[in-house]
Length: 219
Image 1 (cartoon, rainbow, N blue to C red):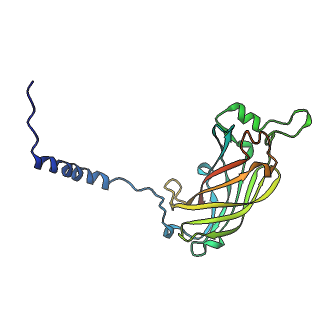
Image 2 (image 1 turned 60 degrees about the vertical axis):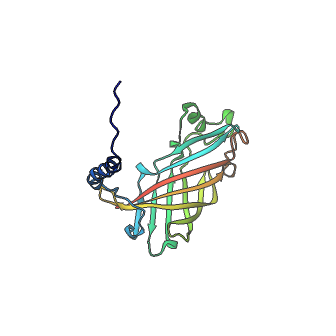
Image 3 (image 1 turned 45 degrees about the horizontal axis):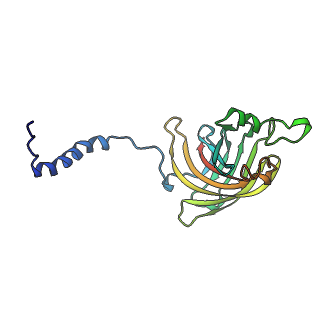
């Protein structure tokens, strides 16, 4: 079988450079995302939660084997923000517990199932009231991109103070509706027993980790 001639060393070195040069115009033409983590893009004012792009994921441990995930969506509410005075920011949101989602239809039904024989429901029961979070203070982080948002969480008829670790993730104009938009990621952990949701503890963990992603639009 004939052998192929070896590629000259100079050609081996030049080929990657030539390919990179050929790709450069295509990369330069790629569109930029409308949102960037740039505080200079944030304008002061009152924003409204973008319900279609705001989600609260929750995670509990199941039997000590692994974690189970669920989701709240359709978040509504407002954010008042001035980038020159981040500590003065205020946020108020509403979370429809009745629209809770899981990967298991049986579990979702159980979360909203009424109690048997007049007993309290295992979890939220049918037609649960919306949960709410109303900030009481905002403590900006030293990095200028994060903050601790302290507030009152009302869930299952109980109100408790909660501290949320939030990070600014992007700002810009939404290309679909031209609205000025700001986005944040946030995390916190609550104990469901604090809100009278005690079914299955400790087999299903008392600690519930919340992973929050929310966008607010300025109309």
